[in-house]
Amino acid sequence: MKIIIPSMGRGDAIITHKILSECNYSVCIPESERDLYFRIPNDKKILHPNNIVGLPAKRNWIIDNLMDDECVIQLDDDLVAFYNLSEVRKVYPENVWAVLYETFLSTVELGAEFFCWGSQSDAKMYSEFSPFAITGYICGSAFGVVKGSKVRHDEMFNLKLDYDLSLMNAYVNKLVWKNQIYAFCQKRTFRATGGLSNFRTLAIEKEEIKKLKQKYGSNVISGKGKRGGANRNIVGDIGIFLNLPF
Figure 1 (spheres, rainbow, N blue to C red):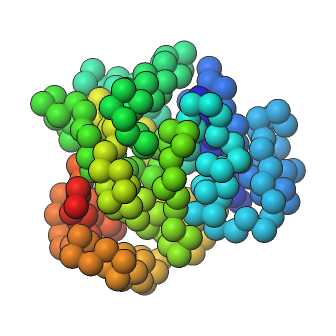
Figure 2: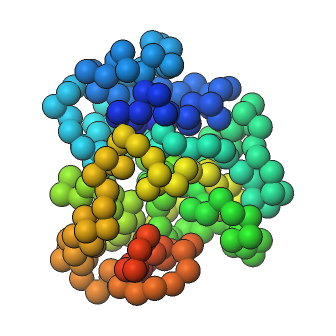
């Protein structure tokens, strides 16, 4: 199992590696940014060609080039904690690897190709009656891909990668393994710098939703609602829901 942190333009702001102090991980960055990530040891850096531009292209490159014999997990670079929601406590660094690996093993037993954890780190949103799920939204901030999967990110999308991946996986594979007992806590997206935050706006978000509707039709539903589960609304006056599975 490989744990990869895709990053760009956040040499001073990357924080996910702090909760992976007891794990074997790598930070994947453009060749041109090697020196910007001086906080990351050289043996933890993996450089991709500078012509790999955009997050979907980078995620695909990671799957195609950094997969080992089991799986590759991709974690956003702005994760601040990993929680056990059933016990309302942080997972100790020495136990993080075991939780991630157990989730992978359950995925293989189920016969799924993608796995993830809860999309909400607030324990109040956790349902003890639904600790696991086999369908639904794949949280883009923390997910894993089993070796052999043919599903890739559509490089037409710049921001709604997780929505597109969730719908594509639901159509192709039907299954995803979600270990909702655990969840990563992420910094507020619109407050971050670097990465996608450099060009994220509500106007672009709306354009991305339009492209989703063109690709998936009635399985992408506009509206307002509560975040969580297979449905997830976005920041602002507009909302979006995914009809999963379909």
